[in-house]
Amino acid sequence: MDNQSIVTLAIIIGIGLASIGPGIGMGIATAAAINAVARQPEIEGKARNMLIFGIVFMEVLVIYAIFAVFLAKYLFNLF
Amino acid sequence: MQEIKVGERWVENIGPLQVHMDTLLTAWFAMAVIIVMSLIITRKLDIIPDKLQAFSEKMMEFLEGLVKGEMGEKGLKHAPFISSLFLFILFANLEGHLPWRLYHLERGEFASPTNDINTTLGLALVVSLYYISAGVAEKGPGYFKHYFEPIWFMFPFNLLEVFTRPLSLSLRLFGNILAGELIILILILLIPIFLPIPMMLFEVFIAFIQAYIFSALAASYIAAATSEQH
Image (cartoon, rainbow over all chains, first blue to last red; front, side, top):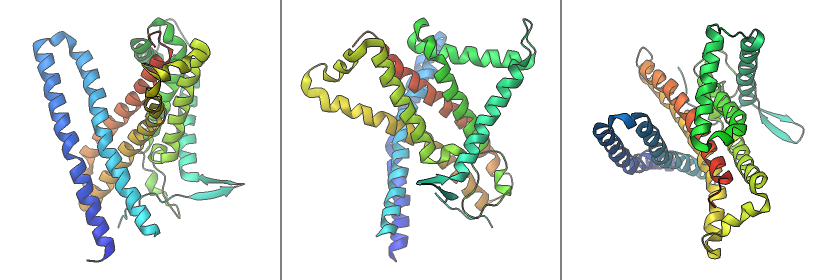
C-alpha cells in the first residue's frame, strides 16, 4: 500500500469510528423523547424542539471528525 | 462521468483579496431572491391578504415566535436580525438543489454558498459580534463581569466559550451542507437514476433544520447575553 491509500483508509476508518458514539447518543435521546411524549402527549412540540437541539449537539461531533480528517488529508498532501 | 472534487473553487484576485467567485455569485443570488420576493410581497398589502401575503405573514409569525420563545416580548427588537439570518441560510441551502451543475466552470462549480467555510464562518462571526454588543448595549461594561463568575479563576474556561461558539456554529452548517452534497454526488456516481432522489428530499429537510438551528442558537446566545441572571 502506498501512502495515499493509507491516508484514504484512515479517513474512512476515522469517520466510521467517530460516528459510533453520537449514533448511540442519538438513539438514547430519541428513545427518551418518545418516552416523554408517550407519557405526556401534550408536550410534543416542546419535546421535539429539545430533541432537535440535543441531536444537533451530537451531530456536530461527527462533523468535527469529517472536518479533522479532511484537514489531515490536506496537511498530508502539503508536506 | 461525474468526478468528485472537494474544495475546488473559482478564485479571482481582486486587489489584495482572494475571492471565491462561485460562492460570491450564489450568495448574491440568494440575497437577490429574498429582496425581489419581499418587494413583490409588500407591493400591495391588504387587510384581506392574498396567498403570498398570508404565507409571508405566517413565516414572520413563526420567526417572531422563535425569538419570543427565547427572549420574551422585549426580545422582539432582535427579531429582524434573527429572521434575516434564517431567510438567508434557508435560501442559500435550498439553492444547492437547483441544477447549477449544468453550467460548467473551469474550476469548481456553482452550489450552495453555505458549502464554503468562509460564508458560514462569516455568519457565525457576525452572530458573535452581535450577541456581545447586544450584551454590552443592555448592561454596559458590566456585561464582561460574567466572564469572572462564579469565581475569578474560571475566566479561561468562560473565555473559551467565545471561541467555541462561532466554531461550532460555522462547522455545523458547513459540515451538514457539504456532507449532503458529497453523499448525493456519491449516489449519482453509483446509480444515477432514482437512487439520489430520496437523499435529495432529505437534504431539503436538512436545509430547513439547519436554518432553524442556526437562528435558534443565535437567539439563545443573544438571550443569554441580555438576560438579567448573570
